[in-house]
Image (tube, rainbow, N blue to C red):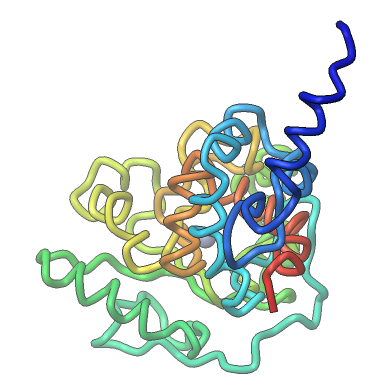
Length: 261
Ligand SMILES: [Zn+2]
């Protein structure tokens, strides 16, 4: 192609790199500085963000200022220290909560959304039992070992976590309803799948995602990540918590650094 200095100069003069190249008024990102942030995403998700990066940043913005412990990555490859324990655990008590044993704990900071979730269920005439909430590292160690003894290591690993790798250690997780895949076909299960996100609760191990999450379908296991994060999960991450939390763990700090002061 023939070099055309005049045309090139016009482009430079007409489009100086400036405020109009910023994707979003609250961030310092341009298309080229945002690109590496998105690189780790699967192509389909990345394309959707690149088609409307301003909307993505607008939706993601609240996740950068909410408490960072809501999106800690805990999975088969990322473990919590054995002494990790939130300092605001409170006991879930009947009759506010339909618990199947006494002494189950949840983080006080997020007790209101849990209370609202349960109230909304009750309004529908539903009151599924909560059978697990916070679990300490030591409790999880015993639990996992019991499953290994009963079912063997390979099977136990598909439905139970080694100590330090359970989301339950966060204190922001509940198991609610029958602990069986059939829960998904009950009124409780259907309601939870459809509405838990409105209260900030995300199903961690959805159906057909074992290769991604490491676990079989658990329609009863919900982690509180916040309403905005649930929205972002649904809209930008294929409704997969694992994808959102992995992304946040890898790129959250970079996105936060791109927020204008
Ligand atoms: Zn669980």
